[in-house]
Image 1 (cartoon, helix red, strand yellow):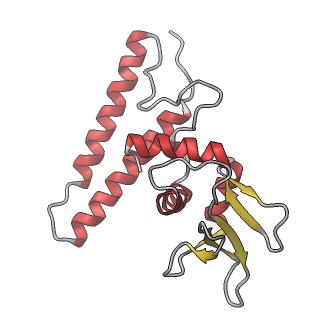
Image 2 (cartoon, helix red, strand yellow):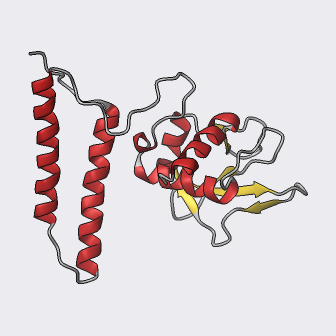
Length: 190
């Protein structure tokens, strides 16, 4: 029998999310004085993975990924394939600026400006433009994101550089980001 040497990216991302959820639950339980069964949770996750692998070997075909990505070329990417910190940053920006609706290219989009700091690494601040063309920070508390959070979003094409800006600036990519966010908002995965 031929066995696949690697699991799919979707399966790997799903297993990583399961592990992250196990650790998060254990930390929350420890912090709040609840019963902890971290070893039992790991055992159950390993048993589930073992049974999936065993089923694959008996069937002779790999088990489908827990949440397969759509195979259409223009389909939005699977939410789990985005690393967790960039995923949360992107969800936060979209949640506050786009909400549950899709914006059209002629509507103002939020954008990020790179700021240099004297005693820390450069960071990105999110701004939005209201209907009166006024520029204002999106987050009143001054929340910002580091380069390591923003770079994966650039590579995935969810953010794009603004060429005519005076300072290094980024913006959500029009139709792609809006379509992707609408799919995520409808599924409730964020």
